[in-house]
Length: 231
Image 1: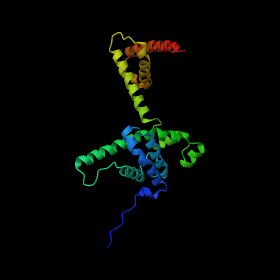
Image 2: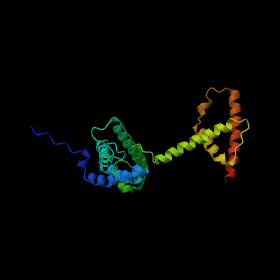
Image 3: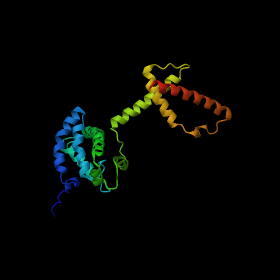
Image 4: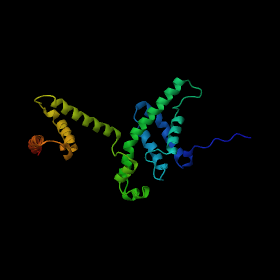
């Protein structure tokens, strides 16, 4: 009985997938060397519009079997793989290289994907995403944060730095705030104040509530003075 022919990869069933692969392969090496995955991500994103998710919509998160299989084939074709019969060390190094590229592509895909969604006209959005009426609904459906991952990390770092700076100032009996620290202190105060709700006073006795009311009044007056200074 003749041996069975190997089954063709699922992604090859999609017209255009091979052409995208051919354009992506030469970009893998330069991206790996420079750590600039933007050009590669732009091409890889085209497959997100080629493949579909389980509900038949564009696979923007590239989580379908075809998308994952295509990406694995891309790395194989680009030579980022261990040769047959390789030692465990070589296989581990190849896996590390593949994981590094995949991580870089994921990070670079984030702004590409967001820009594409925001660029859609109402007609294109309705045609590609039936039932979703706006870019916000597309982001919510796909659980996409409409910011580049780098921007999200910077925002988190800035918020953490602001709170740390406020904590350091409060450690002094008489904190002195220099102009350079002013914005960070305001950012931290804003985060803390907007996180408060009336239930934080549950269980407080009459004297405590009286003291807190006085401190809030003084805080309001100080903030109004600061707001006037920015006018």
